[in-house]
Amino acid sequence: MHWHKRLAVAGVAGAVALTASACAGGQVRGAGGTPGPSESAAATGGAAPKQNDATFVYSPNLGVVTDWDPATSYSNEIVAMSNIYEGLTRYNAETKKPEPRLATEWSSAKDGKEWTFKLRQGVKFHTGKPLDAEAAKKAIERTIKMNGGPAYIWSAVDTIEAVDPATLKFTLKYATPLDLVSSAGYAAYIYDVDGVDKDGKKDGGTGPYTIDQWQKGKETELTLKAYEGYWGGWKPEQYKKVAFRVTPQLTTAWQLLQRGEVNFVQRLNPQLFEQAGMTQGVQVKQTPSFQNLLVLFNTESGPTKSAEVRQALQLAIDYDGLAAALKGAGVKSSGLVPQGLLGHVAGMEPKQDLAKAQELLQSAGYGPDNEELKLKLTYAQGDDDQKLLVTLLSSALKNVNVAVEAKPMAWEAQWDLGKKKGQDVFVMYWYPDYADAYSWFLNVFRSKDQPEFNLSYLKDAEIDKAIDSLPELTATDQLKADQVYADLQKKIIQEKAAVAVPYVQTYQRALTADVKGYVDNPAYPNVVFFYDLSR
Image: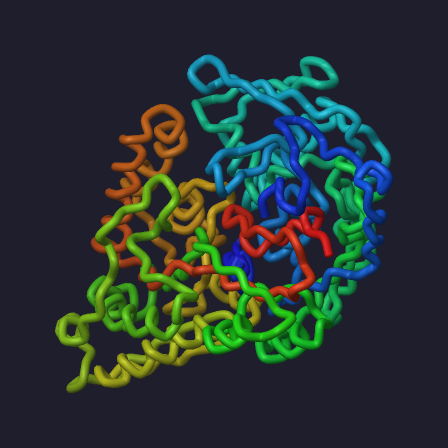
């Protein structure tokens, strides 16, 4: 979704272009423990910490919220929702394991088909209702019933039982790592089912922040405020106010950051990032992500229905030139699954081969001596990296008599057109819903009657069957799962030529120097966990 997925997903948005450690920010939590209140000034022998009255300003390049419902939200709003809502667990990117959130401990039995979670005591929803097992059960059952884009994460669940107010028991249809599933960035939220408001006036979360004001389409689109009754408690130095200020132009975001008007820019272009690293009052952070760029080819209709044309397009991309121009903001992909996740395959890096591309085009009836081939391509408006890919590809193809009509679009418009099959090439980011590769295959490449994110419109029963076997294999036989992932990537990329995967993003963030405790967590793309920060 991402901010482009959705944001792509942005990724999930525009970078859906579209995807922080729970222990950052000077708070140490034991398993299931809660942070203690600030030590008093007398006990520490120093002055009491100063109250932080500042608003933390996050500057995304695209609109923040497309869907306020925690059951169905599947786009850029992850950056806000992850601070308003919580799941049973949260993935820790450093230990590569889920850790306690609303559940303090959990266990599984019957070969991974039965899971029991113990709930944290004393948690209140923002509606004032207490969190208990019955409320958590209702939330997950509502998410499953609504069956929105991300609800598939719960597809293994057969029944949920509130054994007692503090105990939630799941019985599964097949083995699945439910502790990992419940750390997902989408659809894993536990919420008060009566507190859902699609207009963004209120929310039913348990997180540290609650909605202050939402104004769709305004530059400062969303402001959040501290939920004073948060179970984790508050310290004076934490940020109690947060604003999302939408700044489509990177140069503008960079100027605002230097002036201290915004505190966080999720992505600068390589030149500005380099400059930021040498600018007083600014700090930079760089982290490998689970977010990659997908160039999806329409396998169903138009000129790209020909496999030869699709293979030619794969070979026309200047992967090395692109990686060099990104100057560290992206590394060449090897297959569909980024490093750090089960299913990553080494040695599948793509290479440009224009001579071979021309041969393939020629045999499909295109190329220099034939009629010009016209292709419609869509990509995310305001995304410099995607624009660079499009520029390099268009100029390479021009030499072989292929004209690319490239259209930068706002994510929602691009996605709507994709669902109507209105383009030959669809460029977007993807990242997983939880730290597992299944999301790419189920969402992007499994057959669907109505396309959602499978914007290559691939339909292949054998591929579908292999995809469907993944969750259970991941829980019971990881070596076999790894092999199925490898085979699927060869089929989808090499045999079907449904996609080209130029690079995996490296997150390059810029923050004002006064922000303490920021840690990037690639399992929650572009999310800043504001509660973990202090000034």
